Length: 320
Image 1 (tube, rainbow, N blue to C red):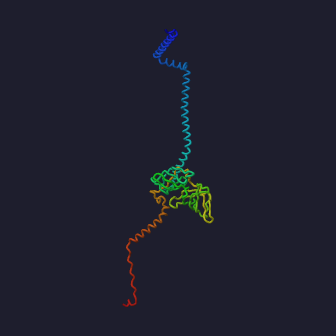
Image 2 (cartoon, rainbow, N blue to C red):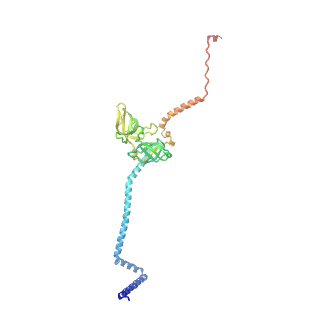
């Protein structure tokens, strides 16, 4: 038989069940305002600690989410701030290229430099244009500051540029004042480091002061006239009574060139792009052509009969 304590627990559970059932039925049939009021009272009294813990947990979760959002926004802003100077510099370079394209009268193709020149590899550049864009070998390459070099080889989509630092680079030039002319070539110092140009072949009597701008002369038919090449900084060497060789600070730096202009001729014909230089080069060819046509016409024409000389008349013949 069950003990008295067990029977008391059973009666107590039964009473509690009946009370909860009655309260549930009362809650079902009671107005909503009663339920809301009872729930608010319970939250403010019995369940107040639980509600406080729930609020703190929600604040912690939202704070962590807010922190992650703020951190991501700060990182994005920092990244954009770091990229802003380069974007401003690129925009400025593009504006300078647009200004250069308005000043030049020769056809051109805008190109992006795919390979930046380094300290150990500053003699060639790789451009994003090729023969399909009209680029061919010996097309000049310009930056907003001045001459970069010349196209060495062109494929369908890319082209290789020989910069002014290449040992084989040469350009005929003259001073902006017009009092001296010569040839500009790369200068290699005693330590073998490239980074300057030399102005050769200047007559000894033609003194060029420091700070004088040197431009391309247009002789040779490759570079147009008037492209900035460099600025005179001093004398490298001189031969008394013969010539002076001047050191030049290059006008354009291939290492900082991200976008350039390639001067091209329509259909690859340099004569139409630079008529003044090409006319000089075309004169010998035209003269040879005229001589060849004259020879061919002379060979095609039938020879004319030579007049036969009259026989000499002597005294005896006249008597007869």
